[in-house]
View 1 (cartoon, rainbow, N blue to C red):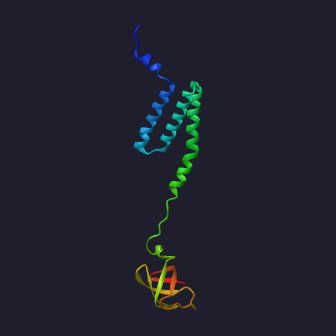
View 2 (view 1 turned 135 degrees about the vertical axis):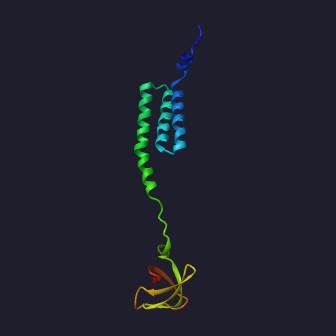
View 3 (view 1 turned 135 degrees about the horizontal axis):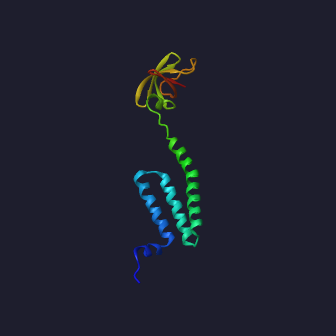
Length: 151
């Protein structure tokens, strides 16, 4: 008696079908960059392992569902939190706050000049009674217009 196509398909072990499913989920994961598909692919791989060690179809489906849901429930919120916490880079005058500068002309509460980030800036002392002499290093605490406030 000759065997039909359906006889050969029915002979393929369940773990192979689960791996085919994992690959089928992995391909769109790479194309679309949707991490949920990867989590489902891991669930299918876990079901393939379950089938490979002799677990029945009900156990395989439960393992697939449990692993997939657990990954989506645990990993997805963590990934979303990391995605939303992009590093903040200071630009413009905000990048100058906290930098050190060198006094070029005496700086006091009424004014003076400093060299900050390779440029000459007008400066004023944060404490009106404090003065900084030529050559001293000062810290920039604020930028007001074109004037650096230093201490």
